Image (tube, rainbow, N blue to C red; front, side, top):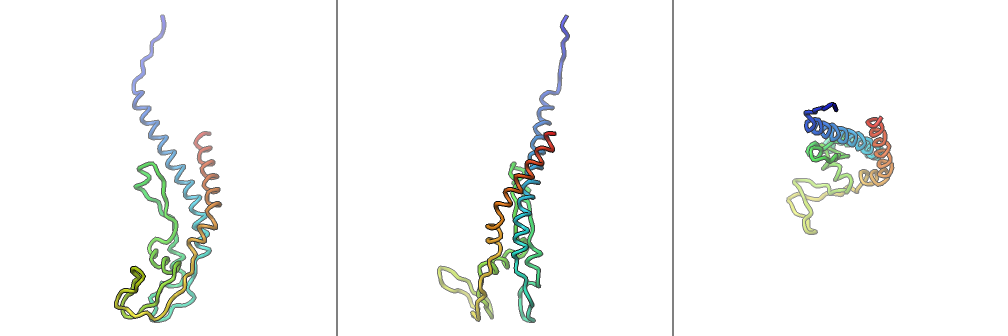
Length: 163
């Protein structure tokens, strides 16, 4: 007489295996993205300008503040959708980084903005600060090394879960 076996909970087990697979995939991908992003972050930190000295009436950030503001931030909402995205660069002082990267006018007594090729506002232009690109050149110089770091970390993470 053949032995009969009855299994219950198969669907529940498949559901749990799917959740485990998604968690492993998300965690491994997050670690790999962090490894690649760290390469770019280090290049940005190396290239970031540091203000030599700040005058009394200056509204500039303290020396080194722009460099200290560079970081890696993950977008949790995109992870829920199965995508791991990260922001590499300034977080609180992104507007200052933009001014440094592309240059800006020195303005007294208000503000000026460039709209449709014309200056608008009630401030007075007293000078100009030349651009000092550091974010884009750092990214362009390090993106290939970043991809290599991503691939190496992903391989390491996958081997950890397969073994």
